[in-house]
Image (cartoon, rainbow, N blue to C red; front, top):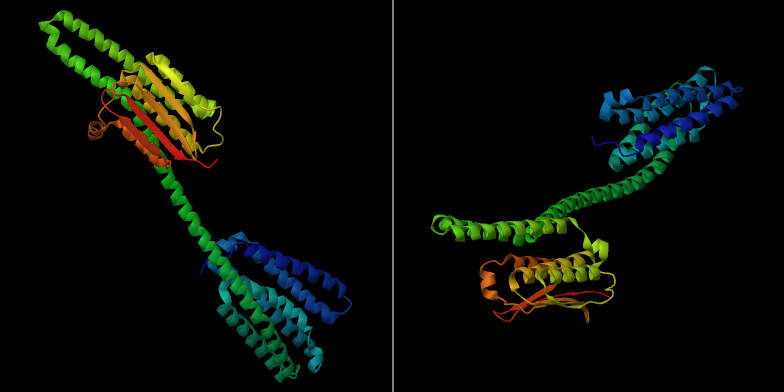
Length: 409
């Protein structure tokens, strides 16, 4: 048995409570008419018991999936039995024939809402079984009373057919609407599951990108310094006995390399924590980066940037800043240059960054074979935002790093 439809039990309780209030008012108005008062009194009793049943949490936990069917059975059987009992009491009091009948509209109204609830929960086919079954029970009771001299059985057949004609089309419409709603809920649940999976994948990708970024940031600090210190210590081991003076010079150089490496590592870690793009914006952040690197390495700086670049996607801003940072770090550490040129601005529909130096340059082919990590990192960043990175360099002719990306202005 499937789970109860959301909100169905609350609406069921509201319906029974409303019906109970209406029957109490009807009972107060029919106190002078004993025949009608009995009918309303029985309905008040049945409604009160059903309200207590629906509002009893312990019963719901104990009965589980049978809780709602029992409530619907109660709501269906009560008006049929009350109507039959009222007619039977009137027959005992001497009322003959059709005069013993109650108002048929009251019973129809009482049965209509439970039929809707049944359609919502169990679908059209089971609702047809439910309606036809209730009709046969009602006709069986009236057939017995007709044999005992009660109301005309033909009238009861007409009433039963009238209810079937009304109830079954409504049951079909409600079932169709609920099927559509269930399909939408299933589609929504599937979409939510896919979205959750996408969010998890995106989070994992973000973590992976951040790890790569940290690796790129620290690559030319700790790795470079430790490699240089290792070489110096190996030389120191060779010179320790053979040339103490040279060994001491090597030791001093190792200390200087260690201190410089520590300074660079701290600077890289500070850059990881800092958010210059958020604090300054892209243009000012690139300017500050260029000025800081030029001052740090004693380079002559040529800097061309606009006052503003307008609104840019954060990914593009981050990519430009990190490529500029990596390119300038390479100039400072490897180029042995005397001049640094930085240009940032629009060229048609492209946003371009250019970092160039007059240093000693390098062989691009050998750099690719050796897995030059700085170039790999810049290429990765460029690809992630759909841009292009062009690196030009030859030994003795400096290096030119150009990044471009399409931007809607």
